[in-house]
Length: 265
Image (tube, rainbow, N blue to C red; front, side):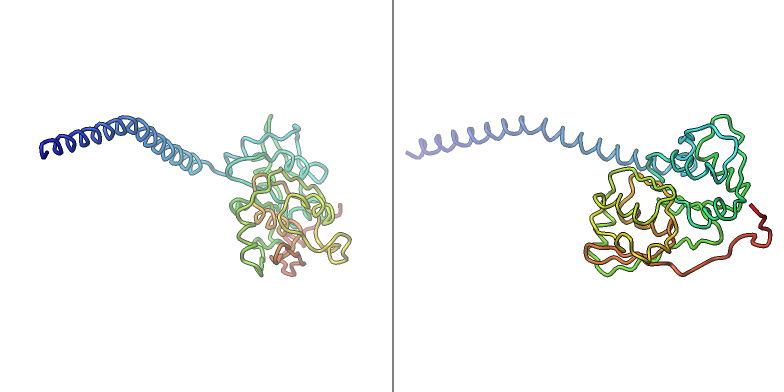
């Protein structure tokens, strides 16, 4: 009886070993595939990070040709050409003309920059402006700002609702945005179905009449970065509430460059 029990036990052990061996044979390729996929994923992530680390705003803008060959940038073509040339890329998410820069073009009318390149790029336009006018360029990742000493480059953003602010920092605005001399009502209407929050003030509000006109292009920016672009373009501060963001006039002001050397238009 004991020998039979031992035989049965041995048979059961062989069946278990056989089943385990089959499972091992089947699982080994799957495990190997998972390891290979993991290694490739890590390698691609490292490669992507390396490419991003090597990329600069200069190289990104140099790949964006101006849509029209131009000999001079001035109040009649500068903003339209440069915003139109801005394209999606991994480094710069928005190109913003701040009020000081647009004042140089439209109010003082003294910004004239010669472009000598045969096939100029957006980078060539930036270099021409910053070398030949009072307009300066500052990259505040991921926003590229064209401004003067008249502008304040840091945005005043007050967070009243942290969960809403966190979502704004994570969510992307899917479409490309381009606002060329656009008023507040136009910007608000264009973003109505693209943002997860409502923008205030409402249309036709008296206070929005004191906002600067909007001149910026954005692509691949988060909702938070889009709010910053708006504030930098129209000289406002914003406050994040539950499902709404309110803009108010930014009272800070810098020094207008070269005011004693203005000439009549």
